[in-house]
Amino acid sequence: MATENPWREADPEIMFTAVEIGAKGYNSNCARCHGLEAISGGLAPDLRYLEANDFGDEWYVDRVLNGYHQNGAVKMPPFGDILSQEAIWAIRTYVETRPDDMELADKQGDIQSYHQQLTDAADDAAAAALAEPMATSGAELEALSGAPKSITALDEAAWLLAQEPPARKDALDALTAALRN
Image 1 (cartoon, one colour):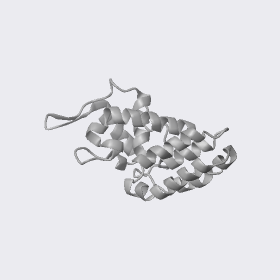
Image 2 (cartoon, one colour):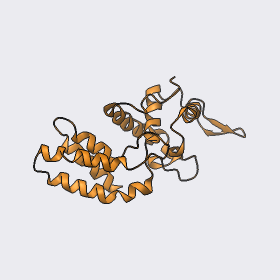
Image 3 (cartoon, one colour):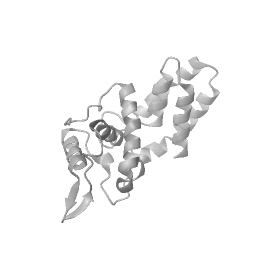
Image 4 (cartoon, rainbow, N blue to C red):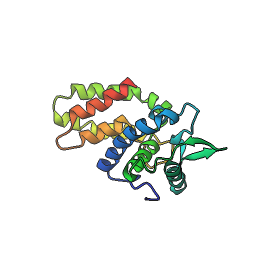
């Protein structure tokens, strides 16, 4: 088992794949206690605040592999025999790249604007031109964990539009999903 998150500063393609897989793994295994979209309702720790560093990684791996018991009661079951190492680190990547939900709510106007601009883009070149300003807007949001980067729909859409050819439909889908939240 790796002792630190191997995808913390990965290339965008790997990072976005890890976040996508991690979101699915988190929602299937962790959300029941730790909250939807990694926002705790208070029953279990809010993992978005777990530091994106060696200490946070060590604590995370110990809890995931061994679970947690308090006064003889199981507070968290072990997942070491259930999840692969790749899934464990993908979940960690998803959680540690979550932005502050209040800051993200403040970006809804930007997301709506870029959604409309992308919908109205006349061609792939016009769509691709939106990648840089979207990435700049997304970069303004910090990860609560202190990770080098938060990942939002703006970041995902920017990355998709920077592909050759631009993945316009997928970028639009990412922005649409963000507007539903």
